[in-house]
Length: 299
Image (tube, rainbow, N blue to C red; front, side, top):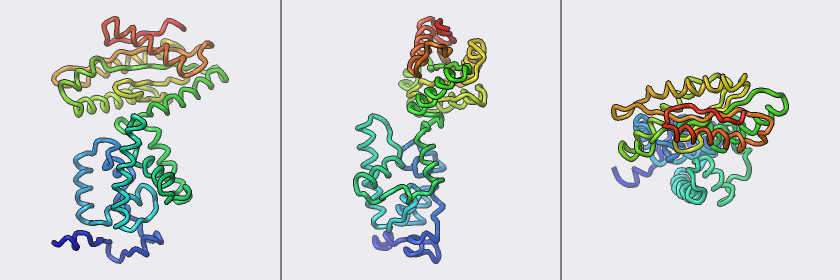
């Protein structure tokens, strides 16, 4: 096959640029989540990688139009889309370096088109449903699916306000996987990521429907417990998570976690206050031998 043949757009039968511009056809082969994985927001699975390979071969240069359409719901001609995709990935890398965290492709794309090229004049180009999807993605940790660091603080801030306004019980569990760095060093980050994902699922399985599980970063997690009746209930949930986590294994060993629990009271004025107390209890759990739950003394 010649180079020209490789670059020839491979449209579906009857599909033309005019159709795509008028949005009378929809490239439904690409989901936002798939494009997110492909761009490096999270590890891509083998099945996803294989599917991407098939689509690249099947769609040819139109593949890049599909990528951008999935992210923006806006059509770009294949030749332009190919160039833009490379520039957006570079922009994503630059933003990630400057902010010190992995910036998602949807955020990088919107920032690139809004602030660099002014290609997208407003969010009216994106459907309301899609805006909601973008907002949801920005609130979640890409690896575990739990609420991320910034979302955790916003959600906890709201719950602290509810505590003072309605006098509803509120507790916080801070969790840390013991000796996690040594797991990464000995068995590699892929194994470490698997453990983080399994632990996130374990947390979700052991808490109540009203509880909110978050990943602060690394191997640090938080569970927000609204409507708790008191320290006893919070301790019970924390102990349940700790005990169940030991079923996660690596290299023939079981993981353990250390946990700190804090209960909201009248002196709690901010999320930071509650997190600081839970972190202090977590430190005691680590210092006392790990693999245990410690309650903050300030009830």
